Length: 298
Image (cartoon, rainbow, N blue to C red; front, side, top):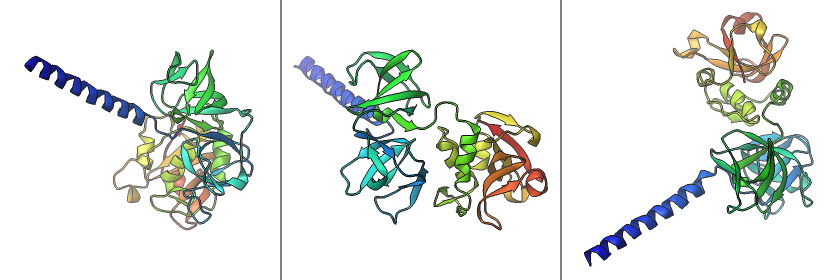
């Protein structure tokens, strides 16, 4: 009897462990599964936090980009995911892909993500991908993306991949042009969205669209270990992050301000003084030249 009770107890423990393992596996994906793929039909399309024109703007989308549709049952709206930004767009400016003819890039959002031979968890594992790796996305089937990476063609479950318009090497002009569309956006302390930015929130937000997860502080970004450091203004290239330290404002930290170099001795940044928002300033003389710490090329 004791032996049977002990065996039953072990079975119960193993059953609980199995349930917990399944729960952990279910939580491993950071995104929701897609139900369809859509393409934007309007430029500067507002992705909103709620299905309402009065809700805050999460980000802006260009025309003719592929997005993952997470919910297509809403009246007049679609819930979508683009490059990890989740929100709602008006159905008037999104075309659902019925013919599965879109192409895009995909960025992996987990480690140990399987590329399978078929669109099923029972499909043979062809290769394994890790965080922030990029693949070509060639189609969509039952919640799975048809992808190619190197010499491998297979399927990745849609909650482990986010669609993006850029592959692994974004051009500097893409970064600069994207940043410039927010000129005039107001300064908001702690802000990291098109409704308002602080300095590091602005750089963090812009580079998030290109697959980078930067900390939300100037010092944290400077010390993140990303990229290559540049210490001479003359060696900066468009798209480089730039950092500054005004001792009167840094509270002993390594940096007090951050921006993005756009070329010709200028940088774009979210300023809390005077113009109070996203502006372009000179780096070659004056305040920013005096307090320049360095740059990072991602």
